[in-house]
Image (cartoon, rainbow, N blue to C red):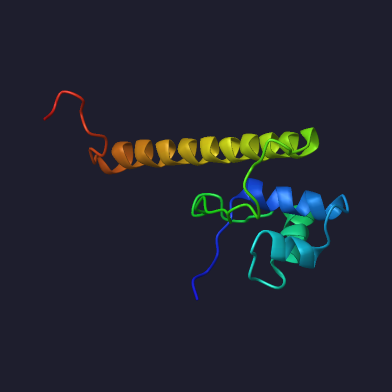
Length: 123
């Protein structure tokens, strides 16, 4: 069975829903198809201890479980605002990841004298 990987923003959204009492841990596991029985508890502990649900931002991939139901026009304003908040966090995570990759490339090019970026005038 493949290991599931979720983004930091997704984990925070799940932890917040559990903390607010919208769903309990077991309901959240079923709703978002989270296979790990203690995953949400681990996310909660990491958030309290380290301020992050994920400890590996750079190696983390952006894989999120599909929503339990397709968006409909009858969604409440609260649900839509929660979705916007989730998407904003995902965007923030991706911007951090992009900046980390840029810095790694700059360091490799400078320290190892390796041309990594493709020059725009080449064919």
